[in-house]
Image (cartoon, rainbow, N blue to C red; front, side):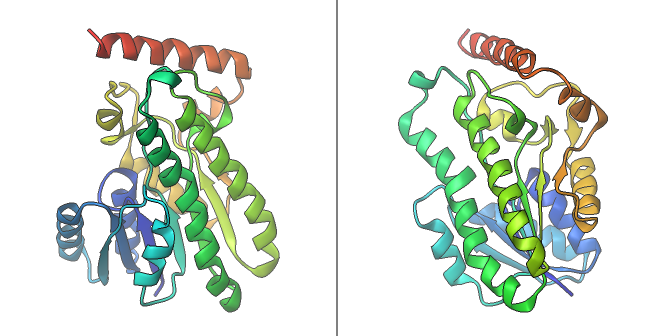
Length: 252
């Protein structure tokens, strides 16, 4: 029975992943900054399965949070899911500087920190899996959502690099690059959810199946995979037009 740590595990893709792992009988360690959400997720998962559900409150958008979280763990982690993240939309000079810093700390800095802190025990055992959640935004720059897309490009590049390092040690490192997904991401971003967004459950099922197959980069959904065939400039223009429209609508 594996122990699976999921950051951002109380909603969206993170909670859907938690449900899937609970079905498999794995023990879960859920991380969130919101204690109420953690307790609700813990209760729901306990009602669904006999898995052990541990919850830890930790704001991973703070400097040094990865180390703080690691020191709270009382067990080795067999599967690490770095899922927590958020996006910001707007012209870069108009986005709040502190919010942009928090985005980078959550999406990149503490993701790297958790990988660095948990990998040694996996190396010692010669077994373990890491799934880092990026985005289809990792494949091109994103005007009017510049820091978010750049952070996900970092996650993809970093994950592919450490996958190369880890494979000879028996550790599997995969990157999930979902497209639009039916989560509260868009409400936090203050934008409209696309009508063709996949459900979080659909994304989670694909993610776990491909993680177990040790697929390097996982892009759920045929449309999302086909989009990667378009030239980068065309994809950038599409993102810019969509995000600029969302900013205009938000400012009405």
